[in-house]
Image 1 (cartoon, rainbow, N blue to C red):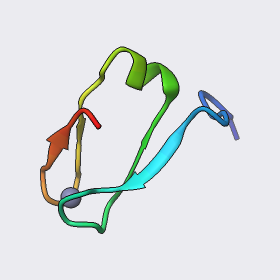
Image 2 (cartoon, protein in one colour; image 1 turned 120 degrees about the horizontal axis):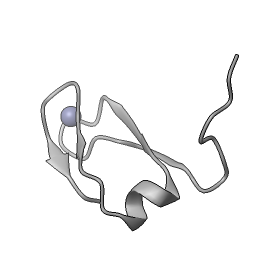
Image 3 (cartoon, protein in one colour; image 1 turned 180 degrees about the horizontal axis):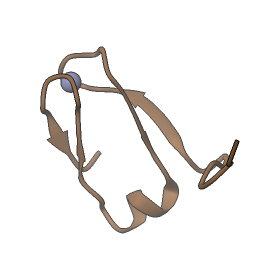
Length: 47
Ligand SMILES: [Zn+2]
């Protein structure tokens, strides 16, 4: 089991649109404003 990019700086939240899929982002990803796409409903956003 490889533990990569897993730190207290990562956040996991539910998709704000469908509220079903969980999305995780790291502090780094937020810092560089990586977009995320919900695998369930296709919602994408920066926050
Ligand atoms: Zn969703």
